[in-house]
Image (cartoon, rainbow, N blue to C red; front, side, top):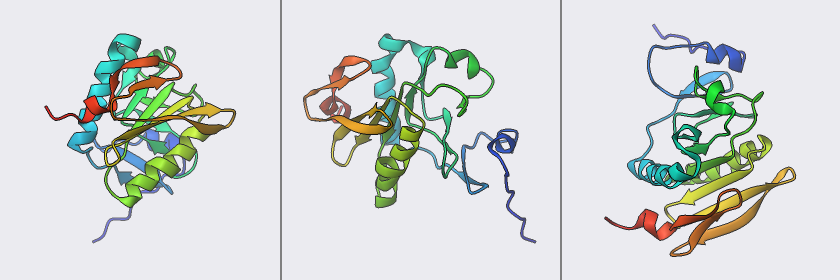
Length: 190
């Protein structure tokens, strides 16, 4: 017998669901789509950035892939590779690591592009539109294939390109200033 897929009529209904696992899901057209585990490279890059931001914002304001961000459109939620949250989020996220639409946006989201055209379009187009709509002030797209980081900043209601960094140029952030690393360091062989 085939079991019918469960449909969720609202994001609140989805948030109250517990399947007894630690799986991450995106809510797409009312159905749960399991988020696959991150690639080792994505985890390495996010871990590197965690270490970079640690002395700048402290460990309580840096969140890895497990942070859930409610967005408009489909899917209704995203899991950025790295997020810098605002001070006010720390208390709000104690029960569930989800930033709701009713909350202030995080300060920065970082996505590491996974291989494939679908993933590329997702990070460069779909997520960009959703994060822009969510009014997140800064969005980084790290592209291992091109070995670049595109830094986008919110200007009014649209993202504009602050800069594209590559090689040995120090990364700069409109909010956090010149950071003490280059993209070449991220991709350097150990």
